[in-house]
Length: 276
Image (tube, rainbow, N blue to C red; front, side, top):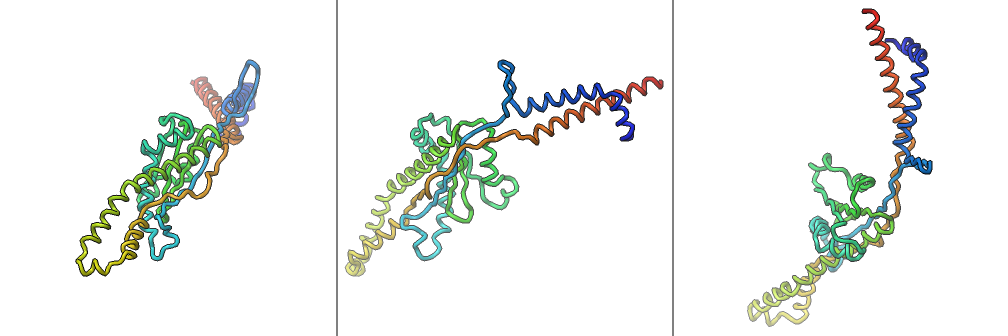
C-alpha cells in the first residue's frame, strides 16, 4: 500500500484516527505525569534524590608530595586496597552511627578493576554515579579509584542532598580512622624490629651508631606509614530525574503510529475478505 493510498484510507477513518489521538494522549500523560482523580491533580513525574562527592588522597605519614623520588607509585597500590575497605563492616557501622541510620541501609559498590581489559565492560565512575538516580537503594556509596594517582572518590546517594553530604563525610572519616587504627596497631612491632636490628649490629658498628642515627632510622620507619587525607568538604545537593517532554512526545507518537498501522492492517484484511 503506497503512502498516498494509506493517507486516503486514514482520512476515511478519521473518526477512528481521532480515537487513536485521544488514546495516545492519555497514555502519554500517564507516562509523563502523576494523575489523581480525587481531587483532580496532574503533577510531572520526577524523582528527587540527594547526591554528593568526596575526594580522598592516600598519602604517607610524611607527605609524598614533599619527598624526593617517585613515592606515588606505591601509594596507588595502597589506594586500591584502602578503597575496598569502604565495604567493611567497621567502616559502614561507624558511618551509619554518624548519620543515625542502621548499617544495613548503606550499600557500597566498587571500586571496579582499573585494568584496560575492563574499560569496555565497565562504565566510567561518573556514568555509574549518574545511574544511582532512580535506583531503589536508600543510602548508596560508589567507590572509584584512580589508576594513575593515589586518589579515591566517593559518590554517594541519600534521600536528600544534605544527607548525601553527611554520608560522604561520615564514610571518609570512618575510612581514615580505620586506616589509622591499623597503622597504629602495627607500629609497636615495627619499632621493636628497628631496636632489634640496632641491637644486632656488630659491636664496632654499634659503638659508632649515635643516638641521632637511631632517631633517623625510627623517623624513616614512621614516615612509611599510610595516611588518608580528606581533600576538602563533600560537595552535593538535590538532583531531579525528570521523565521529560521528549519521553511524553515519543510515547504519543508511538501509540498513535501503532494505532494507525492497526487500522491499515484491519482495512487491508477486510478488503481481502471481500474479494474472496
